[in-house]
Each structure stands twice: as C-alpha cells, then as structure tokens.
Length: 314
Ligand SMILES: C[S@@+](CC[C@H](N)C(=O)[O-])C[C@H]1O[C@@H](n2cnc3c(N)ncnc32)[C@H](O)[C@@H]1O
Image 1 (tube, rainbow, N blue to C red):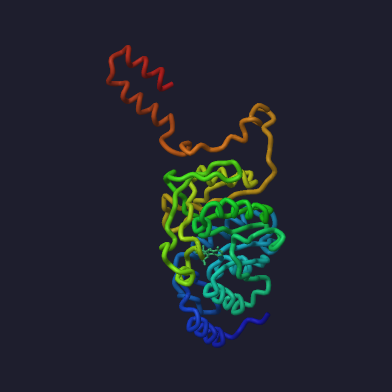
Image 2 (tube, rainbow, N blue to C red):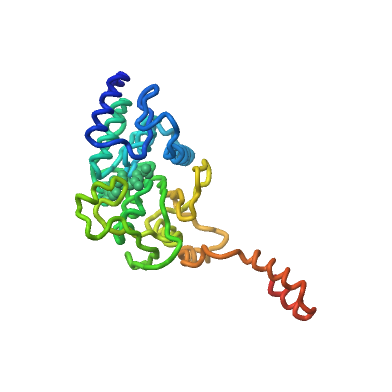
C-alpha cells in the first residue's frame, strides 16, 4: 500500500469529518503536521504509551512478530500504534462512525498489517478471530452488563495466548452479586442510556454501550477472581509509564496466561491455591499499622494493661 500525498490526506480527512463528524478521542499523526485532532497531546496518547510498553515488555519476541487484538477500538489509535511497530493488528468496533475514521487513518498510513472489523465484542471467539499474543481490552469492560461481562472475559482468555491488558473502571462498592458458572461476582450497576431511549439514540452516543442500558462494574476482588477463573495465571496493576491522573476507580491491569506452577516446598498449598479473593480482603489498613496504633495507645495505659496491649500488638 502506498502512503497518500499530504494534500490528498487532508482532503480525505475533510470528507470523513463531513460524513461522520470530528474525531472524538484518538489523536493520530497521519503525515507531517497532519493529525486527526491536533498537533498537541490530547491525553489518550499517554495511555497508548503505557499499553505499548506493557506489551513490548511482556512478549518474549519483538512486536513485529506479534498478533494484537484491540477490542472496541473506537477510532483505532491502539491498533494503529501496534501496526506501526510492525505487529499484525486487528481492531474490532461496532459503530460505523468510529470505524470509518479508523479505516481512513489505516489507509493514510498505508498499514497493510492492520484490519478493522465491524462486530460486537460479545461475538468474540477463537474460531472467528484466531489467537493473539496480546489482547487489549481498553475502555470496554465497564460498558457491558452481566452476564455478558463474565462471558466476555472468558472469551478474551480463549483467544489470548500470552497477555491481556485491561484499562477499566472498577466498583469500589459491593452492591449486587451475580452467579456465573457456579461462582459469585460482586459489583454495581452503571447507567449507560436512559431506559426509554431508542436503539438509534443509543447508537449516537459514540463512547457508550451499543444497546444495554446499564453495565455491571466489577469490584477489584471479583475482577481478579474472574480473571483467574478464566485461565489467567497472574494479574498485575500498572503504575509506570504514568498516565496523567490516577483515579481510585480506574486501573490498568495486565493479566498473563502462563503455566500454573506448584510450590514444591509446600505441597499443602495446592488445596489452598484455588482459594479466591474475598470481597473484603482488599480493604482496610495492614495489621502492622493497626499494631503501631495500639503501641502508641499503649504508652498512656497503666502497666498491666500495657503488657496486655503489647501482647496484642505482637
Ligand atoms: C469508551 S470507548 C473506548 C474506546 C477505546 N478502546 C479506547 O480505550 O479509547 C468504548 C468503545 O466501545 C465501543 N463499543 C461499545 N459496545 C461495544 C460492543 N458491544 N462491541 C463493540 N464495540 C463496542 C464503542 O463504540 C466505543 O468505541
């Protein structure tokens, strides 16, 4: 594929904008001094740097040998970035307005190793899409309702051979629980669309769910458990490279599909290993902090009470 001339790119971009509206999020350099949005950094580029670094750090082989799947790819930034590094990249997106912009950028950048597919991510399976070294689940998990969200995580595990990067909102409160494949998952609902909106109205909200009026946000423990149940052997939260702002209910997680290992020095762990995170296990201060509080409190107590407190503090 040949790179189009700058003037041609600018003209074609104008056509896309007239037909589908301005780009809403993904700022991509198309040619010298030609960007989808602006020559200033807009924000999503920072997450792109993080995701690119994670995947390159984790895959054993160079990016140019990797197959990458970008789910709910919006205007294509992440799929395009990986394709520019030589990866075979596939972006899946449901909305025509978003896809048209992604496809235009692919052509402007002459990326033969990139494919955009119009589909619902809930249709993901290995028969249809094959397998991928890295699966990107950025800004989509929290747009799905239960039980679709549980099914979706299992489907991502099915197509993933090495790593899954999730950038998502999580629920900091356990309000509702669901049973899926005999396990219980906690979270809360989030309103995507007013219930009386038509499908056509929902379609116009370019960043939202496509049809479900509410989504189910998992708590951290439930999300960690779900990833383990789906077959990911370890899960990490990313702090570096930094993004501009860290919200309490937003995180970038890396889930790895590796070989489950046994601790040979503690065979009895085998039975305990399948124990899930409990919903309360990620809350509160550590016993060390609690005990140092007790020690401080202990200093002002009479001697017999003091020795009891000392015992408690350990
Ligand atoms: C918040 S945006 C995030 C986009 C992009 N991954 C990112 O991180 O910048 C959510 C995207 O998911 C798409 N989407 C929502 N529901 C979908 C579905 N069921 N199947 C495919 N795409 C969907 C929307 O059209 C939108 O592009």
